[in-house]
Structures are given as C-alpha cells and as structure tokens.
Length: 616
Image (cartoon, rainbow, N blue to C red):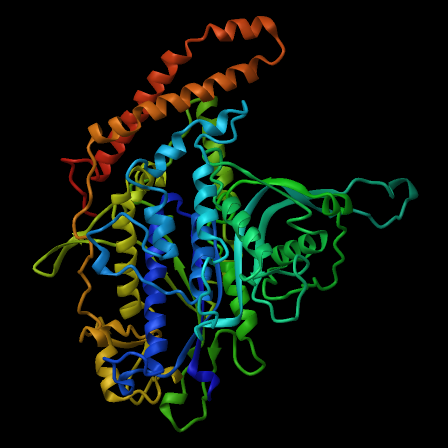
C-alpha cells in the first residue's frame, strides 16, 4: 500500500528557440510548488497547518528535452539537484532586469543584458568572424557565455541534500541531430550460399538521431559506456553538460554547430544509445535485441567524430523516450503498465477501478497543429518543388510512429502545458489570444529582441503552470466510488480545498498547490489572473536604433568572407567578386530584415499601435 502512495512523473521539454523562457517559467512554478509541499509536509512552513497538507508522494523519475527545451531540462535538473529553489514570484514582476539568483530566469530572461548591451548585440557582433570563417548566421558566443555561467561548479557550498521529489537515480535524456550517422547494415544472403555472392553489398541505413543519456550514479553503470553520470559535483560532468546544452541548442545554420568525437561518445556508449533508439529500450542500461546481432561498423564506432546541429531537426519532443524510461521504472509483474489494476471481485466499489500510477507532462511553447484554413497548393515549377523538399524531409524525420499507434492503448497519464492567455474583463474571458507568446515572433527568435518579451513569456509560463497543476494534472474523484490511492486518507478539509470541478465532474490534483493554502484560495481562484496582464510592445524606431548598424555590419562581414571562399584560388573570379557591391547588398538586406521584423511584429500584435488578435 505504501507504493500506492507514490505517483511517478516524467517531464519533456520541447524545442522552442527563444521560447525557452516560457518553459523556464513553467518549471520555476512547478519546482516552487514541489519545494513548498515538501517543506509543508515536514512542518517547515509556519503559516500552514500540517493537518491540511496531503501526505502522498510525487517523484520525478526522468526528464528529457530538445534544443531550447534540452537546455531548459539541464538547467531544471541543476536547479533541483542543488536544492537551490528560489522562485521568481510576482514580487519581481515590475523589475525585469538584473540577476535573480535563479538559474532559469537568469539564463532565459536576464540572459546577458546589462545597462550597456543587450544579448542580441552580442549575437550580431562580428568578433567570431576574425578568423575568416563563418560558423553560423548569428555569433553564438552568447550561447557559450550563458552555458558557462549557468552550468558551472557552485562558488559557494549549497545544500547538497537532494529533495525527495527527485528520484535517487534520476535520468535525463537530451536529443541531438548528428551530421554523421551510425551505419546500420542489413545483409541479403539468399539461400544458395553461393561463394561468389559472399561479398554482396549490405543494405545500409544511417542513424542520425542521438541522445546524451544521463543518470544519477547508483553504482550499477559505467560512465560513458552505458550512461553519462549526473554527478554534478564533478567538473567532468559539468563540462559534459555544457557541451550537451550547446549542442542540442545549435539551431541549424542560425547558431553554431558543435563537434563530438570518441572522447564524448565512446564506442560502447554509441552501441548502447543506438540500440536503445532502434529497439525503444530506453529504460535498459545495456539493451539487447532478441534474435538479432547488429553488424556494427567498428571503424565508425572507434573513430567517431561528427558535428551536431540542434536536437529538434529529428526529434523535437522526446516524450516517447521519456515514457519508455518511465514504463521500465514502474513496471511490475502484477499490474499493467502505468496503472494499478482493478480488483474486479472486490466488494469495495473504490477498488473496482484502474488507477494511474505514472505519467508524462510535456511543456511545448509552440505545439504543432493543423489549421482548418491550411490547403495544399501544387507547385508551379522546379523551384517550388525544391523549396518544399526541406519541409517534407524535416516533417518526415520527426514523425512519431510508435507513439501514434500506442496513444489510445497507453494507460499512462499524459498532459501538456502550452501557452494560453485570455482577454479578460471583470474576471471573465472574452476569448484566447492567437499569439500568447511574444517569443513566437520571427520564427521563435523574437524573444531575443527585448528582455520585456522574455519577461512576459516567463511569467505566462508560471501562470499556465499554476492553472495546469490546479486543474489538469489531476485524476478523477467520486466519493465512495472512485478514489485514487494517493487521495485515500485525505481529510474533508483537504478535499474541499483542492477539489476540481470541470463539466460537472470532479477531480483531485496529483501535485497539490500549497500556494492555495498560503493564499486561502480554491482551484478556480486565479484562472484568468496574469502576472503581466498587458503585452509588451516595441517601436520600429527603438529596434532600428538598437540593431540596424549591427545587422548591416554582420551581413557585410559574412558576405566578405563568403566572397573570398567562393573565389577560392581563382584570381579572375576573385577579382570579379571583389567588384561586387557588398556595402550595397548589406544595406539592402539589413533594411529587408527590419521590414520583415516590422511586418511580423505588427501581424502578431507586438508592435506599438498593433492589436493582439483573438482566436476565432
């Protein structure tokens, strides 16, 4: 029965570019609540009577992420493992700038902004081009600086005791897209065993998806062979986490690719990781495929070197991988996966139901949806076909086959936190906004334009997480009929405080929000309360004055380097290209970029004077 007092969770954080500030806000609120709940159960919150506090347990078993979500996952793990929970609450809402001693806010909102420079100033600077090489459209040194600051050994001794809501053998997976794939060979031997066909070629495919799979050390695995250790008190782990964060966030072309070799991924680790990927055995440290002996290309494994471009190019939401780890961790010989089986012959009606014991929560700042207005347009010519191929290949590489097939047979809890903001009058909704995130502008790069955008999105993440905990991270409750094991023993006072009613059906939360006790609220008290109620707006004068010269300067520097590279050793071609009006093109392109920024911000409602649209 004690096991039935524990609910097991996994978190997945999707890729989001600058929208990682929203994910950071979500996780900041969730960890604030988990931290307060743990303290309340111990009687350490003076204003909370421990008799009002639910006593069941919630344990985070695994976290996974990609790109910006992967970076946020690493920072969240450090936030929790170091037990340095310092939430950025509404008392800071009118002060966006400055370091808050909160790894999530400082990394995703404050970034590198100070009184003289903004983070985008660094991203547009040209000091990364002095060697005559272009690695990315933006100067990615700001990513290096942020990672080095956030992911480091603590300068002061912190509370090393890990909170009870983190599993003692916590796992973390971060997605990568590798330019060099690991060969997977299939042979067609036929039945004749003809000696002349013994050297017939293999059919070879290549696995370009890779994960950095971390686990808290429990003495059962070898570092860089089965997993990477998540012992954050060692410099080796810190260095690996830095590189992992930079690599998963290396947005293709826009941000710098990262290099890996056998020092990063040993041959043994590559075998284990690829086997997990192709067999979906993410919960096993040394996975085996039944009746199969993979013919590994030893040269590739033992001399592996590659570049990594982002994680989202192949798998932007690794919830299936997180779910497989959770399945393995909670599986037993009595119950079906993810549930405690019902006792069909019991006289107690409460026992005659299945109850979930595990689930996954995904944080997705930009969910992929199908618009009813989308219509397929046939290409008119070869150029149209060519331009559509990249999108086709990208969509195909990210398809979730197993997850799609199992979605209705999978009994795990599954929920998603995504941006929602309502237009509110007299505490009633007049509709939800079409673009609730400022960072949704400019193809998700909009958050880099101004700290006010990131500040708004961080707090919206906190507000959406609050509503999710108080309503949707819940299980059905019917007194005397359907009571989840974690809620048995709850007092009437607890039930009255936390009860959720949606469409005349009642539920109780998996994670009780202790802020409801502290603020004397019930579940629907703050549905339409937003810490930053108004959307921040920018003016084109401010944007032009801040960035026009830097945009023009970076374009000019990039064009000059590319011009020399294209000419190669051909003196005639070099002479011709030297006549190309680089200054003219850099001015034209900079003005075009500013025009794109203006049109996009205006269409989404983030330009001064523009309106924020509501969903139809």
